[in-house]
Image: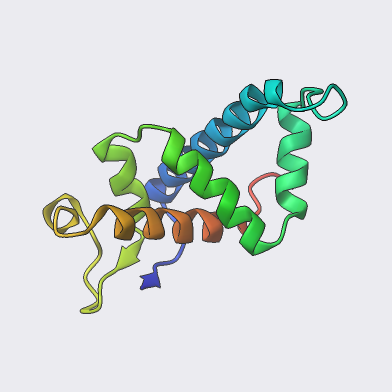
Length: 125
């Protein structure tokens, strides 16, 4: 899997989808804190969640992204913004035309890889 450069309008839209996936992870994480002890159940602000995410290892980030991708119901258009940043083995970018040939796990793996790559881009500095 080769990820194309993170530039252009579609990358901006992919960034927005990435942030929606992080928001879904945040909501899911805080919603499930009701099952934890009182100290652990203290709600985490979204800002604190994002700061914790930024400090996480790539493996930890993958788990957080996977949680959001599994929780959030992405539209076909949103999935295409993410998978469109990846080329198949023949160097052809994925699109609506060839995404239907992928298994669900392949789509999730692409989403995680692209979101991880997007997480390395500085948007606000």
